Figure 1 (cartoon, one colour):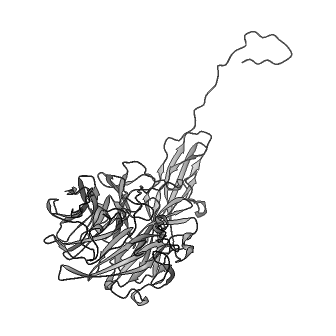
Figure 2 (cartoon, helix red, strand yellow; figure 1 turned 30 degrees about the horizontal axis):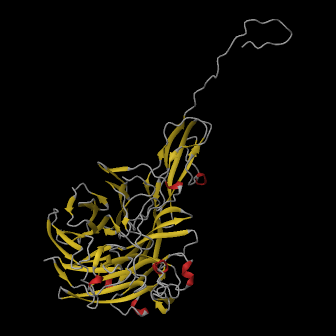
Figure 3 (cartoon, helix red, strand yellow; figure 1 turned 180 degrees about the vertical axis):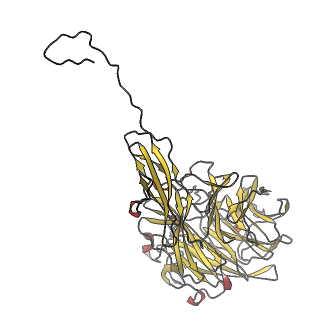
Length: 583
């Protein structure tokens, strides 16, 4: 076990490409700015993952989740309350918020069941060393937000019998995140925590939602545990944890529930991480903590299989120090023998040295790499969702040359074969450490917009329809008003943004459509006074068709003329053969 580095930073992007400014909006319903893919919810909050640091996850202050009927909700932690909002078809509704009063102060996550009841996972830090004190709680509320019951745990519920009380939870949701899933009447929560020993790990608490009694989740423990995920299968739950020592790997815990109150759980490291020889023996925590990887997400598939996507260096050797963290996917049967290639649908092996001291020979199976980034390219916040069309969608934030380029996505079939990939939106951001929701044929999530720096910044509901093959305008360009000649080139428009392609512009002096060669991605400028016709359209990428051009008229007004100084008159002139200046 290892002492956790207790440093927390707010993860913000600091380098911005000027070419991604967005302006303008369309209106769907009063007070809601909207378009086909990006809707201002009229909520104002900075979305962040508390505790996120290096490769440690954090807990987002905004949760998104779906009801069994496919309805998507989102929850915003506002201190004493968590407010629940309903969506419909990838758009906000005008339904009033359902306000759930938190039983305890630290927000973990939220969800709902098939009967319309809501659940909050909260925590309370324990300043004492009394290990019997409960620190993690699941609270149940009815559809109107009335509190029904709360059950708590001291962190002992998923520990094997040989762990003593120093392994109980002292600080919940510390050094990782909190995830929740419901299988029938069993609700389970996987979360990060600091233990009374001072070490960090993951833990699980499960309950029966009918009577709020505890359910045995089986033995689930990893230390450290940087990130936690859980999904349901037809037999129970699959959990995923990212560790740096015991085990130093992405580890899958596969649970089969029986008799409604007990579980059989098996665990297997499915993707290992390299470390320099003897790192744990020398207790160099900075070296041990660096596992050259970041957790992505887990999605349930048909046939009792799951898809796991994350990012990592490709090598299990010293080369991992300098390699980019590329995105990979593994599709496997979590109840099969994960030490064999036959358990995996995807193909690809990865062999080398791993283990807490870097001395164990390992082979990982079913590893399919989806990217091969250049030296100036980076991905972050890898996420995954499965659709009802048996497709898998991997989303990620992408940057190149120090500039943020937006959210991209890759569509695969259930066997992991790539179907297409595309830019979603150059200004969109994903909800950190929270997977998107598939609802009513669309992939949806909550996020801020890149280059919104105000502390009271808008929260957007993003919606991705992967079956839409037509490019579209996210925000139309906006004319710059009141232009006056000033001897310099002036921008005629504020740049817009497109989905499934790129905006292109052309300028003419007459209202005659320009040739294709006249279009470019540069925002149009002009110097001379006069009338200009600006044409803009979306040029589709390889997976989307473009749009027809739109023409708008603008002008640069003439500058006013000025006479500098006051003319004078010579009143006394004497004739000479030379000419005289009369003024």
